[in-house]
Length: 201
Image (cartoon, rainbow, N blue to C red; front, top):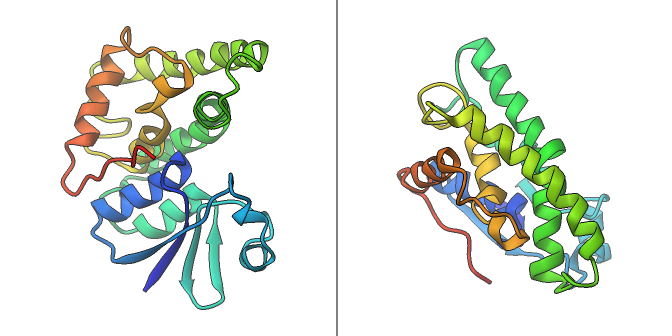
C-alpha cells in the first residue's frame, strides 16, 4: 500500500491527500510534523534527505518527494492530466506558477500568521509577501473569468495544486471577497466527487 508522510494542515501535503481522495487511491497517511521537528529526525532524513514533506513511499525503500511530482506520479493516465499535448503543458505551467509565484507568498504568509502566531512581529515581511501574493491571485482571477477550471473543461492537476493554499488564503491575510471568479472556482473544486476538506487543525 502507498504511504504518505506529512501534515494535512500543510497545503503541499493536503493537495496530495485531496488528489488521492478524488482518484480513490487507497493509502496510509503517516503523520509527520515539521513544526514538531519530525522532519529533522534521522529516521525521516534517511527517507528524504531534504527533510521536507510530503513524501510518498511507493514501496519499501522507494520514496518520491515534492508535492507536485507526487501529483504527477499519481495522476498520469487519469482524467486529471489532459491528453492534449498543449493542454498538458499548460497544466504544468500553472503547477510551476503555483510553486514559484503563488505558494512562496500565500503559504508563507499563512504559516507566519496561523502557525507561528507572529503577525505583529513580522508585519514588514508580511506586507511584502502580501503584495506578491495579491499579484498571483490577480493573475488567477483574470485567467478564471469565463472558465470553469484552469485548463480545459474539467479539473486537472493545476486545479488541485492551486486549490490547496488558495482556499485558505484568508488565513494568510488575503481577502478573496473581490475575486468572484476564484470564489466560484473554489466552490467547483469543493464539489468534485470524492472531495475531502483540509482539517482545521
